[in-house]
Length: 450
Image 1 (tube, rainbow, N blue to C red):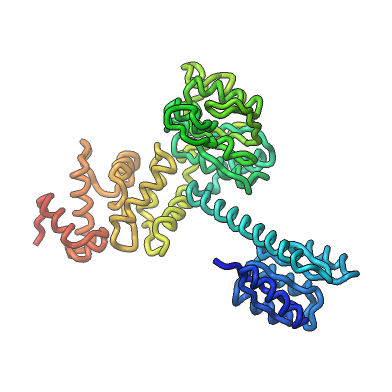
Image 2 (image 1 turned 30 degrees about the horizontal axis):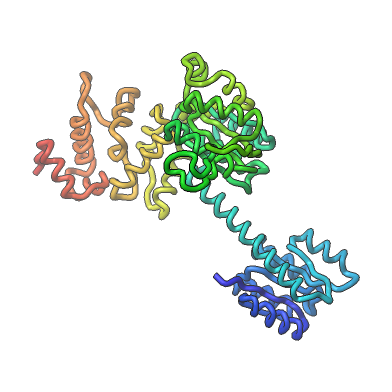
């Protein structure tokens, strides 16, 4: 898209000269000779950069600047000042101006400033996009329980430092999300966040992935390749499932953590790096060290700060918040809700797969539920079975000697028919299934009601 420049200056000759000069550089240029007119044009045209004169006949240039920043805080604004108004220009910089230029000035000088302002704007857009992408990929920490508040406090404390962090916890508890939160809250937030799954690659590929390789280092290495550590320079690298990293690679990683440098595979050049390292594991650390899958010296090097993610069964107060979050994620139109009975079942379950299992348990009912309310019958069968066995408040009456899942479905359908006076159309709607599907299941279970 061609950058659009908005020029706001009360001198028509200046507007004409800047429009002519900047148009020759390939920019679209719009001009205004009044401050209020310029604000209106900023709203209409969404300029990439604004060139603004400090002295305006209707409202002060600083007031125009404040209003432009209210429209878009990231909009680059270059102030035009006259001799004797440098203090005012400095005040403009404090308000949010990107740069200033003093009259008389050379057009080439202004062109350079415009290029720099556009470059800065592009960088800010890229950073904003990357932050959004991180949020969409990893999600965010959600909850108000004491357990998750404690984690959030630790994240804020460690984010202010450059300390290496070890995040532990069961699978599905949100360790990667916590790593992203540390990165976003740190002074490295505008730099890369690079994640590596240590269990996903064999040893010979993992070394090249982490440290890169030189051309000709091995068969197939036709060009030089940067590794993840080099790509993460000045930012953060996440080493996921660190206990699954081969022991020989753990030795090399230990050296990187100690000396903050490495060599590419097949190379001799020592490359210094400035990277924060965050590692995660779902293993019991004492067992991993005793079994030899995690080097003890590497553990101590990684464990400068440890954050333990609580399992979902210890933060059940957060389940309704998480459920509503996943409903919004998978149903952006917000047409479906969870019935109180279904929510009771969700909060009584212990969730061995933690947040990841809960997310799947919400996504599946949204697919099969055809009405606006998710009922117990739409939930995974293991949740219903668990609820029946664990509570004295059954969803349906079941025999003392146990039951099969087929029997569970049959009894749920009978209860739904009773509730709807055996009207098949209303029963199907109540269950969130089509009438032909209901008829199929009635026939399957031998329920031939007239």
